[in-house]
Length: 253
Image (cartoon, rainbow, N blue to C red):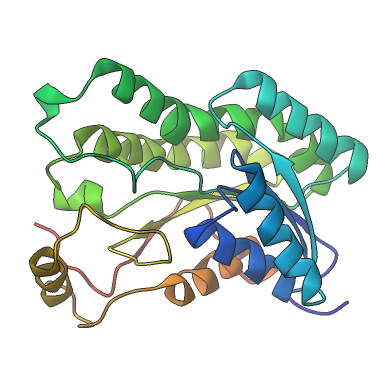
C-alpha cells in the first residue's frame, strides 16, 4: 500500500454524497481506509462499494451524528475493528435541503435539528472517538466550516450560526487536544457545487458569487479534497488550530 495515508483509518461523516463522498474517495486514493459514515444507508453503501470496486479500502457504517448513541456505536466499531483512528473529517451537515427565509421565520424544530447535526454532531462524535484518536498518537481532525460566516449570508441564519460555532470549536479543540498529539483544523469552503442539487442558489446569485472571487470559476469537490488530504496527512504535522479558507479568494466584507 502506498500514498500519503497508507495504512491509516479515516472516518468521513456525510460520506454518502457530495463533498463527503469525494473526501472518502481521496482517503482511499491516498492509501487509507475510509470509514464512510452516513445516515443514508443506501447512499453510504454505494460509496463504499464504489471505492472497493476501484481497488480502494472502505467500509460503511450508519451514523446519525446528532445521536449520542449512534456516535457511541460508531466509536465502538472503530475501536474494536481498527484500534487506532488517524483521521476524522466532520463533514456531515444540513444545508442543501434548507428553505431560505428570514431568521424570525425559521421553525424552532428546524433550528434544533440543524444544530444537532451541524454543531452538536462534531462535538459528540469527536468526543466519542477520542480513545481511538489518542491511540493513533498523531491523529488529525478536520472540521468543515463555511465562508458563509464571513460573508454574513442571509436566508439561513441557523446554518451560518452553526458554522460559526464550528470555527470556534476548532480553535478550542486544538488547544485541548494538543497534548494528545491530535491536531484540529478546519476548512472554510466558499460556494462549492457537487452532484447534490442546490435549489437555493439562482443563476444570478451563482454569477454574483463567482464575480466576488479572485478566481472566476465555480468550485467543485476536486478543489476541496487536496486541502483535506493535506490536513489529514503528516505534511501538515505542525499545523493545528487553523481555519483555511478555500473559496477562490472570495471577498469578505
